[in-house]
Length: 149
Image (cartoon, rainbow, N blue to C red; front, side, top):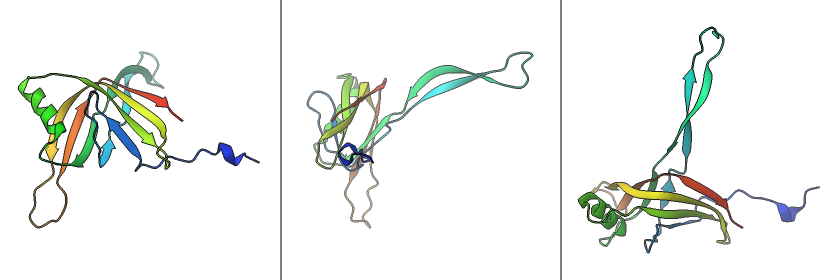
């Protein structure tokens, strides 16, 4: 019989925290884009008509998509505008940490050399009574996973 003390429950998706480098910690409604893919280069060899060989290509990193409530003092929009104007082209290293229900760190993804590639504000619509949500996409050069707890 399995020891119940060693049980590994799946982690909840609503418990996470995000750190965006030096002093840009923020609370987010959602984070997506924690994925990557290695391209396969298919090669046909002359004389081998019964198969196609798959060679390993480059790895593509999906942009991280962060969403939160928009306020008039948005640090995300300020960072994006600094990039757009070329004033401060700072790339950042940040972390997304998944927590358990006791708010203990359980898993962490670190993205490297991130830059704000896209910012968007949700549709303004007078017929709805919803919060204004801003979306920031961060392009990066890789994810590193580490297990916590």
